[in-house]
Length: 316
Image (cartoon, rainbow, N blue to C red; front, side, top):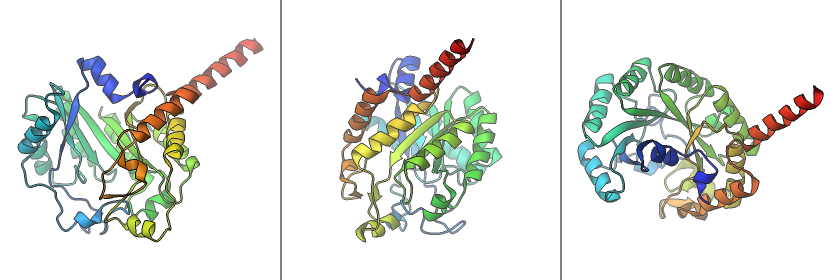
């Protein structure tokens, strides 16, 4: 059995709604980040590949050209697509610049939605209104917020440049405007344990969320953490350890929340460690095995409700 058998996945939602698993076409729209341009700080988050900072962007191609290339790589695997503004902080610019770039993406008739990745502290009201306007026109819009962790000490340790308060504020405003929010979490950040992951999940769920992306911490060349790894100062999650923690988080998550991703991988030579993150399917297979053995999404919540119902009946 695959992940869809145990988890409410975005792929399964698309297949049910559109009759196929729609693909995302990633876009580098030449944005930057306040944590690297000096507004908040320099050097970026400790897990980021800062070696590319001097080149700032990996492409000079237009958004239209990037969409065309992405579609060609997929070789007709979808009939419709989502434009995914993934690189850097994709709401960090003037309103007119953002609108021009988003408009350029959605002029393609095969684009039926926008995914916009950003930081929690870079989403002013005018950006929320802009995105909500696209949604009102019939596009599917997701605001992806890179929280990573709700632990304030960890956020400072990884040089994130914001706290949980900024995340809470943005989620509240975005969902009040009708936008769907997908929150990113990283498991394995320095100093954190499984209890930290559960605490982050509980806080995210308590303030409302529509989707989740969970990633393992992997060390990439050019990052600050790469120096710590080379100095043997980091303990990284094993594949089975990561799968066990993800399984627990999934079992604590209500079934209506959509999982957009439960693992991630990178390619060598950019990837330094752990080695298992260099293989696309290894982590996913381990997670599915864990879910098959211990239960899928919402299992703990369902078990709690069932136990509570039994106690209520017994006491009547």
